[in-house]
Image (cartoon, rainbow, N blue to C red; front, side, top):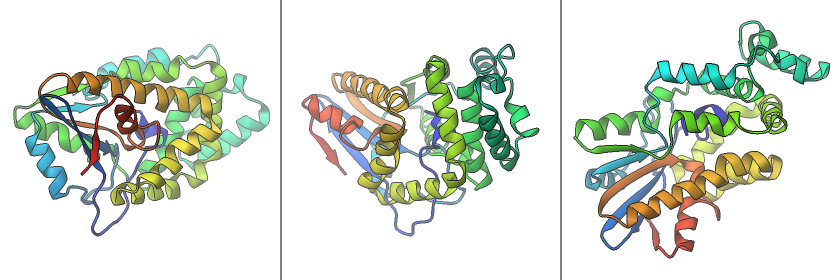
Length: 286
């Protein structure tokens, strides 16, 4: 989800000379679906296309992304105000003095105006999102250079269909509807791991560029599952199940579709390719 651009950014750019991110193909009776793990933010001028990826894009008549309504900034701001702001319950009222001090130190280091005070009106999930976005931006990773920002206008210009598995509202609700305990857990993880965020982003994308699924699975899904199991269920597992079911429906139809969702959703035993195999489909790595 574009929200993952904030979360773990789940996959940011790094330099690799001869890179080829992973691409899978699944076929139904009359339909073909390509599965590509996207990166929601990249450094500029870091190529990720390959002949295999370009060929799949050319063959595809439709593009499926996590969401396609993320360009409506007015609507996004309205959703953020509704779900992410709670001035009646300041953030500091939910934290211990020690936690407030630690958050203030990290927020100040991140350049957030006012430090912790700049996050005060936010609900815990929103503060975590805001804090998680900063290292990515400081390291030069730009959502406008992400995979979706390349694919969407390309498919649109070619007159091909665009579809979204989710909506901004649904993605925001995934976090906003979490119990407060889980939201605070999310915020704690963002604070505790802030110093390691950029090195980890780079390690993640080195693996993405190299098509190293095992490393991606270890760094993304396994770590989140082991440290924050409830977050893992909400942000990864439930959504993987939803993606797999919708791809299953695509495979019952016809035509060729290019599916690009965050790379963390396609790796490991709980990834979308693995789920599709359990449904009886043959999933081939290209």
